[in-house]
Amino acid sequence: MALTVRRALDCIRVGFVLTFLLLLGCTAAFTQGQDRTQTPQQTNSRIAELAAASSHPRTGDIPIGAGDVVHIDVFDVPDLSHDVVVGETGLISLPLIPERIPVAGCTPFELGQRIEKLLQVNGLVMHPQVSVFVKEQNSQPISVAGAVAHPVVLQQSRPTTLVEALAAAGGVADDAGDSILIARQKTQAATCGEPDPPDPAADPEMIHVKVSELENGNPAFNIPVYGGDEITVPRAGIIYVAGAVVQPGGYVLNDPGATFNIMKMIALARGLTGTAKTNSTVILRKDAATGQTKEISVKLKRILDRKEPDVRLYAGDILYVPGSGAKRILGLAGGAAIGIGTGLAIYRIP
Image 1 (cartoon, rainbow, N blue to C red):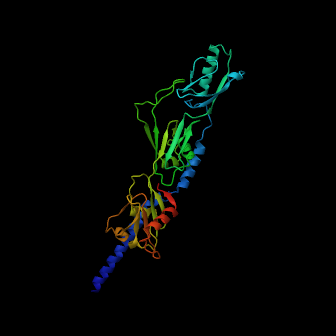
Image 2 (tube, rainbow, N blue to C red):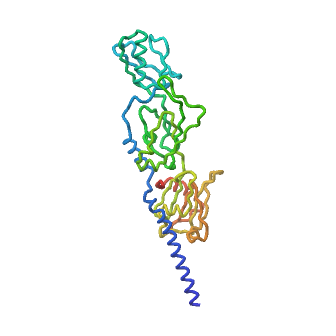
Image 3 (cartoon, rainbow, N blue to C red):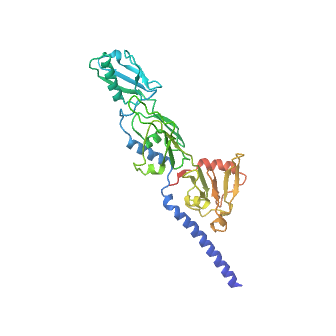
């Protein structure tokens, strides 16, 4: 009898040790990545820092397009100096010049040279000196949308990089994934006076860049962006871990299809505290059809003991592990979900 009891106690001790080692090993597997987790605010600070470092001085290399307002100055001839709006067809009109002038696709310098020749050919000015600058840029929109602080459309008045465009949108939102998509319309070859219209037979070129690649500061990923580009940061969602864990918080998924289960999320939260009531663990999940928050009981102790399969979590889920002094959350799921979902720090998973 005594031998049987001793063996039973030994089995219990072994089971406890295995459970502890399992959780410790799972946590250690994520320790290196967890040490690199950071908040969206840190990510956006890095984006702003890189944007400031990659900014370029204003240049005249951006081609003129429809809707732009250009200022034309003819030296010593004030009657020919004025502002002009480029029409939808890429043409402008100048006083005393009989034909409309195609200017779309020209840089300010090229347009100045073209006007000088026209003034000479039409006998208006013997030795004209013309300078042109774009007073208002409207033809080179770069749009930034999706999971950003505030969607924006900026005009490319100078060479612009991806981090500069993201910084103009205030950086990424809390639930932004790790992917950035850039849709670039393929264009035909252009020369001054012959704009580069989109090729109707071609689908937009899709360029993929990762937020994490930008954060590393590798200039190869901080690509130039151009007028007409559409930049989208897809939303990936957040899984919250609250209660008796070392680092409660919301953890942003890398992409909408990323798979995370309970063990992974507990590891990201740096494991359980000593007061965790594993048998009272619940998942709070909003029902897509009714909008109501439902509570799903989880036998965390059996999952840790590998006696039950792990449970997959989805964007928007809240994994709640009560502590020894906490009341069971049953019946308070709605209020708890609001409190947990809005009161925790957010971390980006590397």
